[in-house]
Length: 382
Ligand SMILES: O=C(O)[C@H](O)[C@@H](O)[C@@H](O)C(=O)NO
Ligand SMILES: [Mg+2]
Image: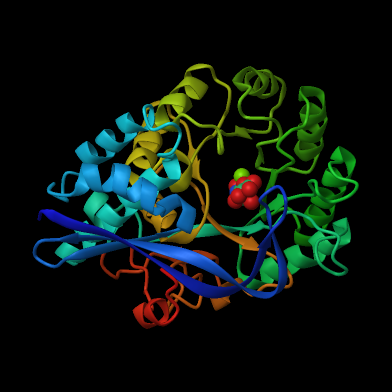
């Protein structure tokens, strides 16, 4: 049970996903990018793995913080190991981030599952083994036939419903798109999608993240007329009072915070201040499965739904082990990308979805990621 090593393998893989200057994903030509797999190993040879960006698991962070906390410890003490890393963040000169806590915590959960031959959600305490997914569409673009017009969104939404999705979330146009942001265009895209899919598909909007209060209010009122389920991150989430103001004015539920720092502690303040109607968490956003579960249970104690940000196995296991979350966020999707093709370093999808729109939690041990170890070894760069 004692941790003897923490190893990071950096490898190349191919993708058609590109990030713009604001960090949002868009399709493009196939190119090679680097990914890191962090492995935690015990004295009896068991291993747990998790994936992240190489800079999140760079040698300085692993040697100066992660190894010092983990080596020699019982891997089953996830709560204490997480607390020790979280406490060290304050004195880390901002080098030890929530993303690093997340990849370490996920590898520890994966290690526990692989050691006991159980899926993580069953170790937590399973609530369900399948969950409805909403299709989370990429941010808009200026690509001919892509997501350049409201009609493009409408056509893509029809395809997503035909694939089986019972919910769709739009991310509309944001800079660096030349004319974005534009509230009226956002509403036109949402109207085109509602027109295309009819009244029985759940729709949500995740908008430009820096609208003013009055712009967000105009947008929210437009969504109310279209019967949308929620509005997400229309303003800077560092201004909790702006969200309190918006939530008080709108009938449509306001969801957040996604990207605000502060883990479950700050999300407790959002609930106490009634700054949102639906809370939000995400394994990468709050520093792991461990704090994501704390956030889910916090929300449940207030009778509040908490929606989980992001795809991948780590978020799926949080959803599968909790009741107060309606959806799994499957994406990000685009007409020019085939999400179901997965990744070349995984042998199969971590979030397979059936034709009725249900994602089934893999019953493989740990996080259940079907890792292609040969690909990783054959494409290693560090
Ligand atoms: O960069 C972002 O805004 C998010 O990653 C976004 O693309 C998407 O993941 C999101 O906001 N989901 O709710
Ligand atoms: Mg979001």
